[in-house]
Amino acid sequence: MNAPLIRTADLAKDYLLGDTRVPALQGVSLEIARGEFVAVMGPSGSGKSTFMNLLGCLDHPSGGEYWLDGEAVSRLSDDALAGLRNRRIGFVFQHFNLLPRTSALDNVALPLLYRGLSTAARHERAAQRLAQVGLSERIDHHPAQLSGGQQQRVAIARALVGDPALVLADEPTGALDSRTGIEIMALLQSLNRDGITVVLVTHERDIAAYASRIISFRDGRVVDDRTNARRDAGADFAALSA
Image 1 (cartoon, helix red, strand yellow):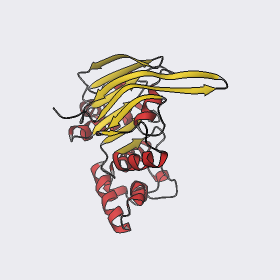
Image 2: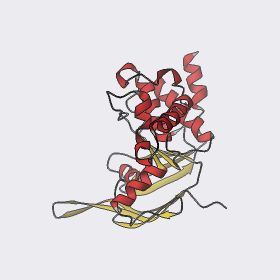
Image 3: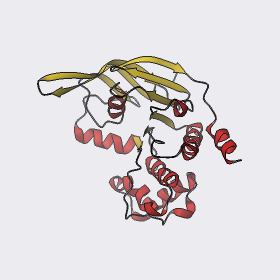
Image 4: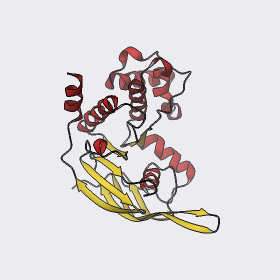
């Protein structure tokens, strides 16, 4: 059996508020297989965003262990975490986080600056990823010239440009209307069918329904973890467009 892409053991995170220690994550142990599409849900303060930050190597745990693609992550230095993020993780955010005065092509190529590639090589890979998300005709457009859905496609292309082991999507449809949100979920499902592991945080059950597994958090703990007969976002989008 293949080793899981993600494995956590008693993962914990505490925050200090003055002299008070507040547990945000309490002893989370789980595995996510390579090629899964997982939705992480929970109310505000449930620990889901803290969990996502730890998976994304954006923060250090207070306790427990985390392995990403077989590498022990929990005790890495900040510099080592930054290198791991750049090599193995792609991020998609609710508000796109694109540079406003930069073309779609250069926005997508940005993570490759730290790989030591030539400008031509960076642009070639960025153009390939933009083609993959259906934006070949928009490579020279700036974010203000793109719709919200197109901007999120640029953000997804940027997440993919480094060939990551994992794509983390934090409320990727939160800034979009429902029709465009379903279009983005259809794209993420398509990428997942091509073998890309996707973990998304969402508070919307309709969006979580497109994942093949749903993990629910409450009070810093996993309270439910179940497989899901996921809805076909492509079919739903086609029905809306008919």
